[in-house]
Image (cartoon, rainbow, N blue to C red; front, top):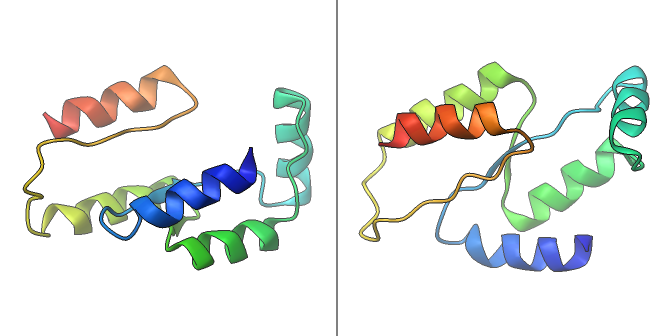
Amino acid sequence: DGKKFLEVVSVVARKKPIIILKSGVSTAGARAASSHTGALAGLDIAYDLAFDKCGVLRADTIADLLDYGEILLFQPIPKINSFAIITNAGGPGIVATDAFE
């Protein structure tokens, strides 16, 4: 449910940074994503507009994602001792969890 997702992201992004690495940007990448997930990749500009409206930081590459993470390391530590990692694969989630511990 994309609408509900954007509503939640809009609220959360006011207090916690949300960084999204979205693949399927190119025509070939969108085709590959569609064949892998069976879902339509959609127009990339629509994602950019939605992310911008909701206050999401978009990473275009893995290097961008890591750069955002490094920048956030130098921000004040949140008073709440919680975080969330959302990923489509176990490996990156585990690596991120290791880094946060």
